Amino acid sequence: MRIADRTEYKSKAPPLTCRPDTLVYDAVTQMAQKNFGSIFITDAEDHVLGVMTERDIFRRVIGESRDPKTTPVSEVMTTDVYMANKDDQVLDWLRVMSNERFRRLPIVDEDKRLLSVMSQGDFVSYTWPQLLGQVGQMAQATFAPAFNMIAIVGGIAIYTIVLILILLYAV
Image (cartoon, rainbow, N blue to C red; front, top):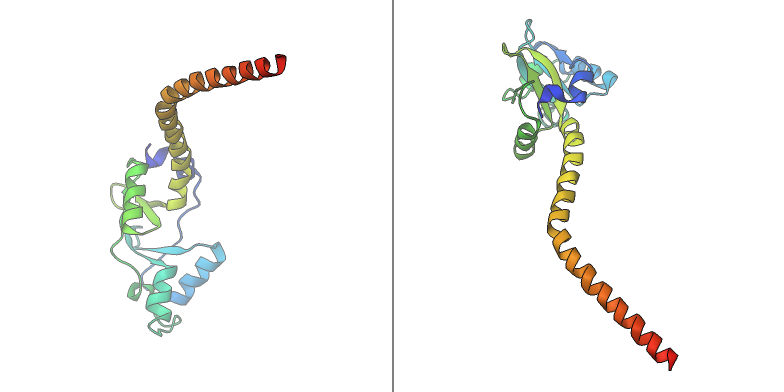
């Protein structure tokens, strides 16, 4: 399934963004107001330059005793950001996100302009029903042939026990 085919993609709120010279304090205030765990740093044309996550704030602001009221986000943001296209496959990106240990994936157009942000949770909501369906199919394929034999043997055993009980109590 393509990212653009997900209901979550179509119904997403616009991504939270700021410019590189925005102070960490102001960016965090926006994040808190919107209840977002990250903010994407973009240029004037909405090209993704980086992302500042809660982890970046803990490690690079608090952990390094920086003043959030004087530190621009450009000094603490993560610049090595994976970016996807809306036509990419959900499962491919879920695998990458899991292996590379990141939770937010910016979706960009052909010119690398930010369109949306998908989270691992958005993708997992797709994969759980799919995984459960696959488990059901595997279980049916694995146990169905064996279950037929078990049902036959079990039926014969129950029939035999009933006949023995009838004969014991009939005499």
